[in-house]
Structure formats: structure tokens, C-alpha cells
Amino acid sequence: MSMWLRLLGAVLVTLLAFGLLERLGIGDFISNRAPAEMQGAAHGRPREAFWFLIFAVVMATSLLAAARRGAEHLKRALVRRG
Image 1: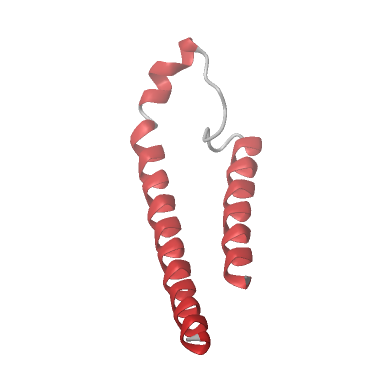
Image 2: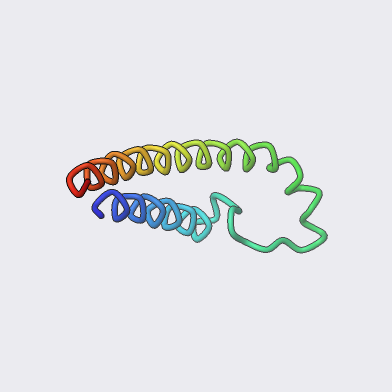
């Protein structure tokens, strides 16, 4: 159970960081862009894709670790009952 809480905490911290960067005007991760701003924003796409890829890799690694731990607990529970 604690691993899921840690995972949720990591997601919340990430979203709070995105919101803080948005609020400070440093990043445009969450905001909607007007059509006139799209040309300028197109140059930021590779940067956003990079950070999204980093986030996706970290999230996938966390989920894989949680699944492996959960599988181990499930195996132990089944062996005790069997």
C-alpha cells in the first residue's frame, strides 16, 4: 500500500512543479495556446517531448517496480494458503 502512496506522491509533486513553472511563466506545460502563439511554441515542442519522455520513463519504471513487488507479495500469499 505504501508503494502506491509514494507513487501518488511523486505524481502530485510533478504536477505541482508543472503548475509552479506555469505560474511563474517559465514553462508552458499545461496552458492552452492561441493560434498566433503556435509558431513560437513549435520550437518548444522538442523540449516538451524530452521532458514528457523523461516523465514517462520514470513513471514506467515506478509502475514496473510496484508490479514486481506486488507479484512477490501475491506469490507469498498464495504459497501460505496452498
